[in-house]
Length: 71
Image (cartoon, rainbow, N blue to C red):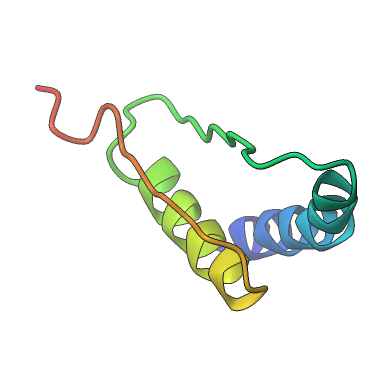
């Protein structure tokens, strides 16, 4: 759990730095893929946390979970 929190903090720091730079260059879309071995738990939680964070920065976010319903 502590490692996951540290991982999220570092990702958020990277996004807070990078997203304004993408916007300055006129980019209108950035795809971020998060994966784990099953695609149903850790990656979903991390993707949701990042989507929520990006939204708080004022960016429009679309969140899709490719493997969540896979059996």
